[in-house]
Amino acid sequence: MDIFNWLEDRNIYVKDKKLILNAFVHSSYVNEHKTFKCDNERLEFMGDAVLQIWSAKKLYELKPPLNEGHMTTLRAQLVSEAALAQYTRELSLNQFLLLGAGEEKTGGRERESIMADMFEAFIGALYLDSGFEVVNSILESVITPHIMAPKAESLIDYKTKLQEYVQADSRKTVSYEVIHMEGPNNQPVFEVVVRMDEIILGKGKGTSKKKAEQAAAKDAFEKMVK
Image 1 (cartoon, rainbow, N blue to C red):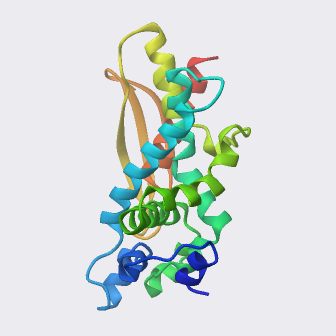
Image 2: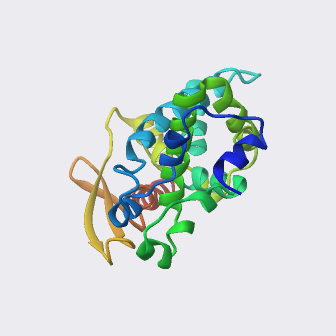
């Protein structure tokens, strides 16, 4: 099965097949093949915007109405890296990823950061090709069941929780900084600190900057609420 069979099974018939296919092209594949001149990063940008507006609209329409803070927290959870990777697994979309040989060998097909980026790119390409209604049919099937479900630890948005906690007592904001990176380029480990003014509130490590920031926020939040 290819991505077009997958879409046709869902009664989706795209116009620009190259655009859709480009959503699955990782930068490592472009480096090794001349078939594609660009990877999926631009489509990722588009998909991120579509996911933000879709999830915002979905949460706004919930009954009974949620307050702004609750909607912000839920939206961050629904479009987090871990959540997008989970949707990718549920839909088996990572089977269509086009990876370079090195990335394939080191487990890139199951790497959350790659799957999350690919999901955003796929949604972006589908929106550009077929519009919001078609995108909605995919997102309804995979995201809606998660909206009111209990959130797994990996889906908790500690960055938002920390910011809300800090702002409850002051108008200050926190900032994140990468202080160290180790490992090969295709399997990096980032170390991040979260600061308020010049005070380090917490530290964390992760296989992407987003994960490291979440780990640092979790560390800080748990220290502050003790």
